Image 1 (spheres, one colour):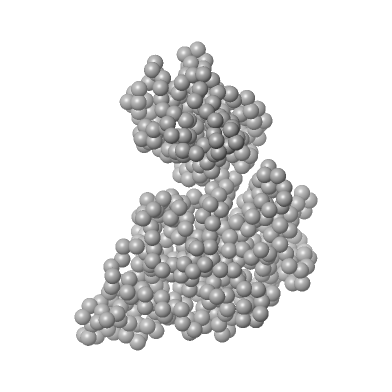
Image 2 (cartoon, helix red, strand yellow):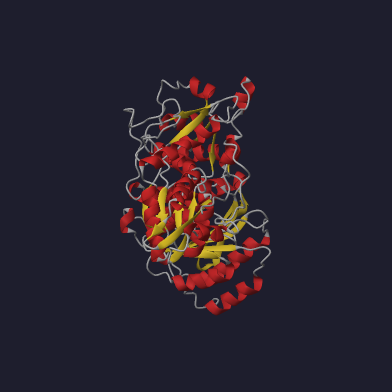
Length: 591
């Protein structure tokens, strides 16, 4: 017996499917096991149930193949197999897997308390597997991972909008799209599904980032172009595809077209499904150069399943790579892994097909993750999270004498210079809704006080220039590291005007351990923090340790009390990446 359950994203309404089942990852219909026992008969010496969580658009095809297998007597040896296929949003399964393996993914919330990880997972993209691995799930090593389907990522545009830029005769590039999105006058109104939660959105974001960095501009100009694109996309971002699709014009009236969404990175399958509903304004699917990373639907056997289930999963995978399965995919507007399509596939105008002599749909490599760049994915997701969220933060920078040390990998710049540069670049990503202040610390900077307030915590709309000047004026002292006294004072400073709806945090950069002989001890600091913290008004403490002299255990003892995390790097040139990662991984703000 095979069951399909879970949400069907926009496809519930677009394809006229029935009401979606409860939003748990795996639901076994009551009585299904009894029914299966009747089907299997007495010849089975053993019975197992294989649970499969598949992305909503491919779940019906997987279900159909599994149904057929079970009807013919699914078995491995003398063990009979039942298959439970759940239609599950990839972000939901990713949250459950991350929770199980101790990983943290930027922009992905907590797993549902009822979520159960499956035996086999078919998400829409191998990027989910890579993000889990690089998000801290070091023991996460799913088997197989080969693609069973494909859907190119396209830029969806209302046909009248696409026609104005030359579609279908003119091939648009990502560089040209970036220019249209960030144009000063009459920019193209573009949107995106949250790229930290949606693989097609992430693919489009990666392509825009690559376009921004390949324009031949300076690093500063490329970053400015990228930030402009992020802010433009964020204005029309959605958490689910159905909501984004609803923003496309629903009338041929010129005003409706002008006010509606003009472009969004979606899958080819999304466009086909949308147009099947016969909307007043159909969407054109633009296949941009260079081709973005497609959705590749990896067949991932999750670690820890028993051998009999692993054997059953192997047989199921073989069924999903047959010519007949390609035709099942075609009914769901999906291609086979090589980019070809089966009988009944209705390709959008201009769609490339290897079978038709068109350009080959790009591959991510056998096993999915082989052709992906984990650094680019991490940078894109963290940059997006930082540039599109809001917060209230006190940045505290170490100016002790050890910060004068040269960094060989930074062309001889000092630790102080590298740290200030990272903070300055990060500042450019924050929009005016952020409130940020700046302190420095060492020992006895102001009389016997270890810290010096430089800029008070105020909205960037009025504070940005002061912060830039404050950062530019930072110089290392000849003092030691008054870490403990500074952390307590910074924590209390952020508490003073705590703001609801934002993550209130202290972000402290240091290259050493506390060595203020006249200040707080570690035990006294922890006791004081425990005394002053307020669960109703939490203040996150993020500590970024630089170099080999940092004691991560010492830093973690502090963040265990306050909430937050320590981030330590032996290479000071990595501070910028870590700073963005630290901000992106902060928990959601309390309300």
